[in-house]
Image (cartoon, rainbow, N blue to C red):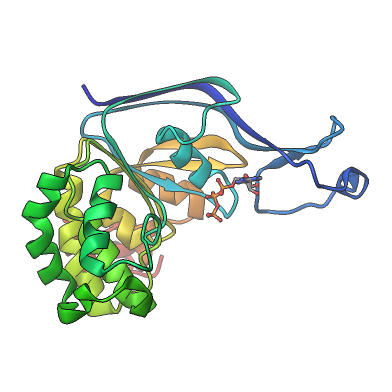
Length: 274
Ligand SMILES: Nc1ncnc2c1ncn2[C@@H]1O[C@H](COP(=O)(O)OP(=O)(O)OP(=O)(O)O)[C@@H](O)[C@H]1O
């Protein structure tokens, strides 16, 4: 049974090299977690009293300002961070995809990197060997696949990484946005593979700043603010709360239809003006 149970979890980062005196001057900022200065060493409270349960079939988007705690929560859900207080119990094979470039070795070939990266994401060597041709074809990298990775452009690396990531069979897929460096045509091609990947995953948690991408992959969402869960619910409701307006407002009819979504009735009746 695939599941995630987080109970009253906190994640603190003590900052040993910060200048406590100057930190005590209050600076009001919109972004970032809370910085506590009561102790000698300033502490950033990246997650504050987070409780959530995720079950098989959940497709959850994570939204929030820069520094709100999304990446920290993803790392907690992946078992990379332990909670400072509280608990996080994760059952299932986790594929954490934070940084598409992570786990790649510049000195070995693209093909070898496909294999290594697959192992890193929980696949067996046999499974990866069976998929390598399909991945190679998807990347359109041709003879470059025999060359060391250091000879690749940024976009070529992303193609390779996306090819591997979208070929795996994760029970729990933890996805952090970072898919910007490829050209639009390739991203469209990757979207279909990403959707198929999400379909065969047990649980998806996806942090993103793109409404459209969130609607492609998720049906519910969590709004993180200053390290705590500010709202959890349907993707539309949470985005409306977070942005202060209905996310459908700015979507074209074609996009809405593609997602199988109903246009906002208010916007429709007044000619899309409000
Ligand atoms: N390794 C770390 N050491 C110290 N502070 C950290 C560390 N990682 C994150 N933080 C702090 O924790 C808070 C939450 O950061 P986090 O990276 O989780 O935010 P985020 O919501 O993912 O932001 P973004 O949208 O900018 O990626 C921030 O205040 C950040 O400064």
